[in-house]
Image (cartoon, rainbow, N blue to C red; front, side):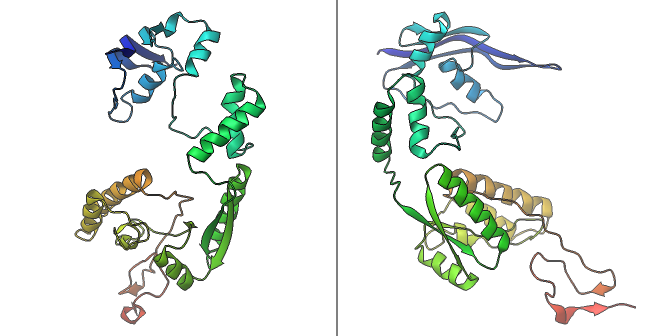
Length: 293
């Protein structure tokens, strides 16, 4: 089979003021045309460094990288930049310019390599059409009118989206209406709040992650087991661990994003008995309260 990528004895060392980190050591890899490889490993194992070495965004300390017969280390900068235009790479972060619209962000790398502006825009439009992007669509963004933090946060988000060409319209509704809209799934974006331990030891987020019938329609065995585990223990560290599992999976797989994190406190006066601090309300189970002398 035709060899597309060869990595020969590649090592990469980062030298800092106080220490030296050997991110890659003696890596050898050969990928043939049509093959698909996945690079897996723990955080800090050097996965991103290796990928960046494949197109010389990160130059190896030692070793050789050959792409389609070309030794990248032997190429002058101008030719290396040209070769990179033929090596597709999706970065971990979006790397978008806030001052540019979606269309302009796609045009930017085309303009850098010298493509005429008109041709770049035509190519960008083709790519957006292929991806199913509809710039004329206005997204419906539902927010609880009773939470000023959510309303203000939504306005900031919408302004940022508008800067890159995403249109969104905020609709503020009362909590009851918000719940009804959520249950109907007749919305594009919705702002909701949920709490984790130790602020709220037993929050119920099954309405969000409970599979078919929940707001997201998302289900995962590991998440379900973690949610079930939170109801089986009162140990705060264990509960925190369970919700760490849930949060990690949510951020990677659920179509949602975190806007901000709030800090909540619960306290009970030393003279009050029968009361438990809670994230919700001030007079929970007030009929059980008593005041000592």
